Image (tube, rainbow, N blue to C red; front, side):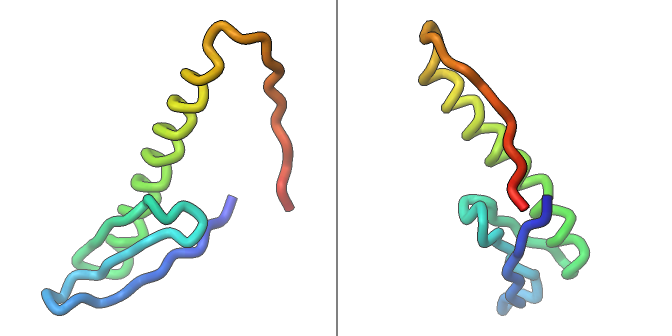
Length: 71
């Protein structure tokens, strides 16, 4: 899956990075490359936390889970 990120050079020389599709995923890095690597971790952490919160909502309920592809 691909994500779009916004990169902005801050006054302190660091690169701010935020994901458009997962706006809660925010990080920074000393270089663009470092910021891009850091945002991958941030996206994974946010998605894992959201997944856990959603699963907790359905504990004890009769549900179906299915994977879908988004093109």
